[in-house]
Image (cartoon, rainbow, N blue to C red; front, side):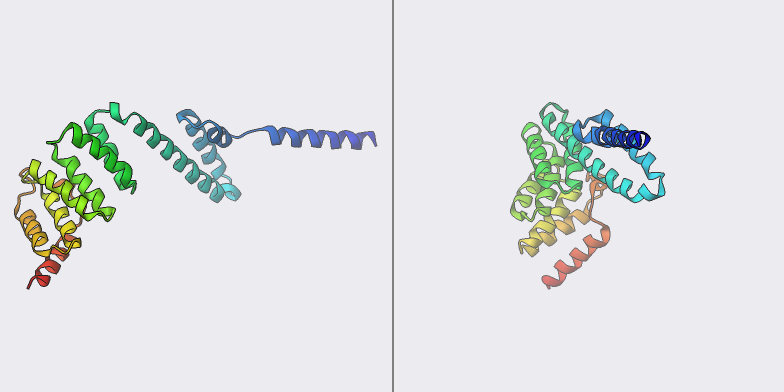
Length: 212
């Protein structure tokens, strides 16, 4: 009887210790930073080696990666005003790629105020506004991009897209044809272009048909 009671006590003690123990995943969630993130990912990689835990570990890794992404973004945005303009611009581009368009526009706005003659942030802000469905704001930003770089191919292309959405088809066609007449290697920054050529050609044909 005594032996049985002892075994029960040992079992209950083990359960209590397990309940109190925390994993690196718990540690990261409780106090997220770069070090605890690396430990959490290492821990999840180890647990993923166990077949029964593999899928759950991947799901947990996705959750942790999302948390860390948001933590890093928040940290970068908090110090954005002190970052060099090029780094702010890169951060804005990353945020736009993540569809965090409001945050991207805020960064481009700040760069526009500090460096009003730099065409690229104006152009990217125009793209962000276009993706937000704010076509008049897109046109305003793209107008500044073109004013500061008359050979900015991408600015003319995005301008054509924005004007098309506003029903200004003749102006859209004019901008698109002008973009295609420029040499992208002659200061046009065509390497920045995110719209596939086939889509540009499709818009060109659509506008020409509308205006026949």
